[in-house]
Length: 331
Image 1 (tube, rainbow, N blue to C red):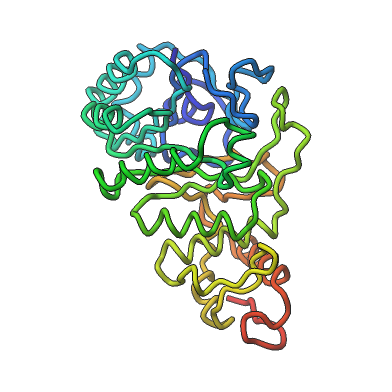
Image 2: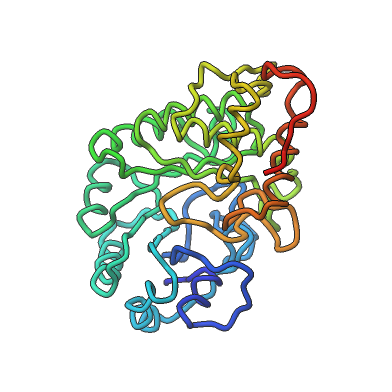
């Protein structure tokens, strides 16, 4: 069974849906019954969440023939990449790989895959089928939290991710969720380690969803998320080393940069946009239109940029970035 994100279905002309922001990646979702037990996901085995939902967005079922017919025009509709996500399943990869190959037959767009794999052999098969990127989602960054919310051994998943990154340089990705109970120091330490290995990191804000065990958990505070976003962005750009960061009881309190330099690096607001594979903007995956925006799916307006920076500045302890007085936030 194949589902499309609601935005993708609209962008391909398969559904009429009003959108504030169009996706820049075509998001497809493969499979029906997930064997995973992720406590934050409505697709989890035994979960009571809506099976047509992943994140905050809906995923309507679309006939496979319709998808294949529409895909050749994807680029003309503003789509720049295809992302095939899959439920975790115990069956072999054959049917999934055949699906990937059919997509590649009708589309020249680069193809990302996000799914549970067991070993490097499965990764090799996915790349051979036409994927140019593969994501092994870690989600949780703390071993204890990982065991509780996903089950299994975080260290083993990181080892597999690193092994694949060495075999396929600059072609591996992962997803990390901020707000599962980790310390800021933990998530940034892992981000720095993964980036150093050439692994692309997609940052998500925890989203409580109905029917999941974590429905009553609150999403991360916006100031926490802005600190993680900013630090992750600076690490990704190579403008900052993890050793430059200062933490107090696990909370980020200083970037180790002058305010003028920090403001220069963050001025355009790119740090607060969706991160992940190239051309992935995931509109409203973590947000509701009109609500708090964690990951902007488009360039920020001047007002949004100033607001995001104000949240960041106000969250840092006074005097931690070797400055005094008020900061000028005008462009």
